[in-house]
Image (cartoon, rainbow, N blue to C red; front, side):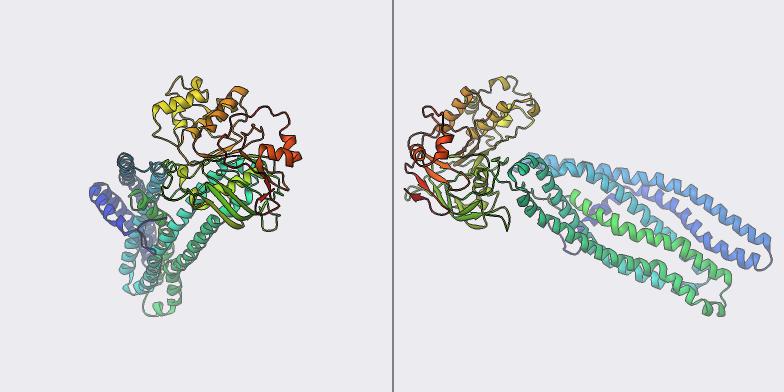
Length: 632
């Protein structure tokens, strides 16, 4: 996460807004202080009345005087309850305007950013407007109430000690100040550690949300090890932040012991000396009463509130007041079977159902531009690529070399579980090889993944449709698509029935599998991209829609990789990759019919060649036993 901050400190920029807010709320703060003075009086009488009742009353044989002082103590307690009610009424006059001020600030900043910034709207600000403003309200109320209580309780207790005997003050003040100083030294690093923990928690929660939405694809493709590997650093980061915060919390407990408990010990140890120097038993008992019933609870509450709610309040206010940027988007979990072009010749020993992942890409479309002085780079290359789903698992791809030329339309076929989607995942950058290199138009697959539609577009087996109007669904990857082109896509993929009301959001759960498939195909067809990855593009389509889809993509200028169980008839000269889990074959339709019994079985009943993938660049048959494609 990127943000300006002191690595060991709480955000100092909060001081100025806090002072400005306090100046504007002088009335409610004054009322709060006035009611709190009654709490100081109650605290003062808590010890002083005990001393007088004992020394001037019961120990002197004057029971009446002792009882009168105890009645004064009861009256002070009743007055304190009345003061508490006034304190909470005045507190509302401070805290509620604070929440309203934060909400106004977040709304104003969000609207300004949405209007002026070319980047997408910051959706994290919705959380800030709801959950985080409530956190700030509750934490601010608790901190203000606790700090107020400590200040006025301390005033009452220390005034009482001074009135009884100034000799008592050093035994209480020295450990109290030492503990509070140690505690103050932990505030800044604790705020930083609290912020680190909150950041780590947000990153892990965002990743968990992406994983939950992709659970179907993760299960279908056997990608759980990959997802677990991506989650491990996030979990470790949160655990590290939590341990760091715990260490500072332990130091805070030490400060609490110094400030709250050490004064009791010092008074008890000094009892013989104090009594011999003229201190009365009533004064000593009153001093212990001040420490145990007033100062100790007040210090305990202060240190606990500032150490937890105070640190969290500082972090949340820092975000709400605009000092921090929202956490960067967390990439979706990597799933095999996603986006890219490949001409594999690999050993596939693992069995996987080919299901691709939804790759939501927002980069501005950038159609491939030919270089005038040198040949274009290959659309995709794999060099000596080995991949397995675990350190002890047999390789799914073993030392694979492959090249796919620009504009080529490659058909990938094979039985279920032969590894087709694993190949696509490697090309997409959502899975990473144990060994070897993968490039898309000169970029590594990992880097190409960050380029969005400028690198590739995927139509997965289970396409995602948003609860939004049809036009928004179609232009999701191409927001600036011209209207005539959108109309052509609607006609080509037979979506007119869904476009009758342009403003009506689609209900994905009410769409048929065929409608969802055609929406995803139209979305990809609209997007200018150098590489299209089509995973079972004609599944759930009837014969007419299937033919229209094959014709539409046959004329698409991009490199197209089509994975299919339905086995559309390749054009003469088009290369076909057959994955059979043992010896992959790469060649033309005619050559594979001669070379592979499995291919002949898959192609049984195939009629005349259709329009799919007519732009081929190869005409030879080859096979691979785990390395370079061999000419035969």
